[in-house]
Figure: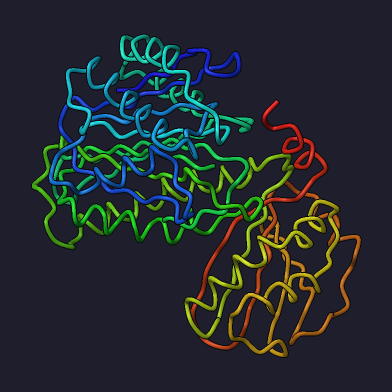
Length: 394
């Protein structure tokens, strides 16, 4: 069940969301690696794998509850307790998440009233899920939701997954300001769920960047309540593999939506590195290219400045031979080769500009050095990014 309401934390928009399971859940999660961790992140990290089940996640936008010392810790406990009281739970059964301005106190009177309102509106209908997704937005221009399902082979049991996320600026996750909650009805061992979550995050949320800033509040939580009625997954088998695939589909969709909705962004940049020496080399190069301000600015201007791509690869720390690199740009089925063996080839600048003007473009990079690959997602760097962040607090 879910709900999202307007409480009045900072701006006239929905700002409190609750995700609630009628059944106790096992959980998996990843959090920011930023040394500065917000109070809700500290709370959630202490709760994760403490031997107790969880049943709810409460989230707010507008105030990050970060860098507030003991007051932040106390306010976060009140945050969890208010939800627990409304749903007849213990505070330790409630995860918390916050996003917004750092260093400002939580308006607890407003939040407590908002939680009561939100809890009273919890529902299983689709609109309630959309309301929750809208309530966690800050500078996002659109809500981000996705759902999928699969059948367990040779049974009539269907497993469902549904997720929401927010993230537009301060996006350069190393988890595992992004928040994401995914719910599923699969019955699964908690340790296996955590393993799946960690693997999926490394291939999705950790492969996006908007502005190279890792938030103090990054949180990804997966709740699994077992309501599907399948035999509990306690080892890696076909059901686990299918669940892992489904979870990756959900996380990848949310990650790409976050990258495409980067602050001020007008288009999505996908970077595929192929035939690299090692997996880590491929990851380093892909993330370096989508994180480069010069690449992002050239992308905004639809300029096929491939030298910036090769340059970003070069300072990534990856091991590769520049003299072997091929680079092309792709949109749908159209492919335009720019570089062969580290040198520019004869291509049409007009065609390149036309491709780079599309809403989603792929830079396809072949290192011709091995067999490993990685994919990362980012966006263009526009004038509006500076405008948004020049007066974010006001």
